[in-house]
Image 1: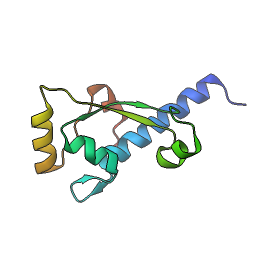
Image 2: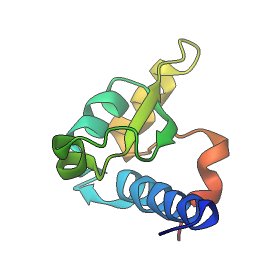
Image 3: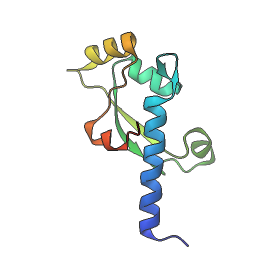
Length: 102
């Protein structure tokens, strides 16, 4: 039986794993993940990660049960799209920065 502290630690590890996959795993200049490529290519940014949000068998197989929120901020859609299309820049919420492994 796991404790609440272990669960929180596991969720943080899962968030870090998925965030780094979405930001750093590339197919050419763009993310390997097709859903991320779609949203980021349309000018969105990674906004939030929710571990254990989809615990169905399909959710576990497709995304380790993690769901991602993408933010379409009208003030930055065009610049996000341009830097993504030109340089493969993945924009994300500053609150996610601590998850990045270099």
